[in-house]
Length: 488
Image (cartoon, rainbow, N blue to C red):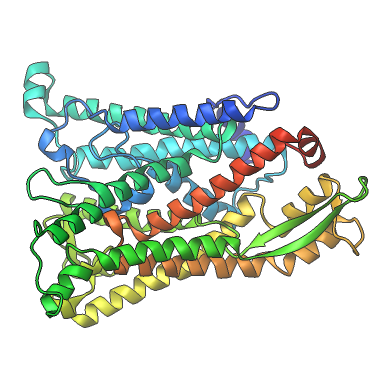
């Protein structure tokens, strides 16, 4: 008996959100999406009971929060981290062909979804337990322990239980959006978190020291309320471009927006015609960023998990100097330092005195991060395409099932697959590597609101795709015959 037969009774009974039996009207989809978004914002503001208030403002994930969503100290402390980590494990197992699951088979689809949910539960425990019980990342409130009479261990158990519930909630919230809403929950939560940071970075006002956002700061500079050096001096130029003026951050943000929107529009369009409806034609677009930027979540989440492991080991058992050196919770040397991604200008601009690290160390770290993102982006893009039914074989079968064919070629899935193989594999690798390169460059130059480069890339690309999906839904709503012709 194989593992599928042994695990089937458990995996097929995993709780799941029911799929809609028929077509879901567009307005209802928007209502479900908006409702889940409101619930997400509400949960990110629910602080876990029993947690020390002085630590609730800190964030262990730091710059990774842009892609892992959630909120530090809230019931959604883990964000989408367990979902993403489970996806990494499944993609690696699927890429090595160790699962033996055919995602085109309905039975195997149910097993795959059940296995993913089970892995998410496991990852919630593997991430949450060390965070609460080891290393002191989320210390329990002594006063709460005394008032309840359960001891510190009891309060930590309560904290973990809340974190566990939050992890399960975000899993099913993602599933609701995927089945009943527009887009995906994971993408929606990333957009929500990054948009908050961008709006704050542009318009926020500091309660004590005057303006802090980009526009309030420049109002202060123009009116003289914010003091900067002379624009003709090196110090003044540094203030304007790298300091309070944030001109470089604004330029980088706008540049990333422009590049991603342009890259999303670059595509190879394969002409299609309907086999039964004369005159019905269409095009299958193979975009430059064919696998989207979502594989970048997997790459950055892998880096986040590596750093999380280093912090846990350092706080729990201590690490030898060659493996990792930490100061105030930040890695400053050793192997884990070189594996840490470049997060801001302060990590590499030694020539401006922003870091005390040696230039040779910084150069090695930049090269490692660049290699990790470019190569990892290409590899995970290939895995993503194969496991989400976007590969040449799956795409050819979808075109065949929709009644379409490529003009000038026989209406045969194998023939369509050969045509797709000319474009999809190469474009997938190039697009994945390009997104990795853009993410590193954006991190190195900095962005408005201190959003990570990967987070900004994800937000722009997901928003663009969400816009396309909404336009497609509206078109289908206006012309129901198109839905019958091309499938739901």
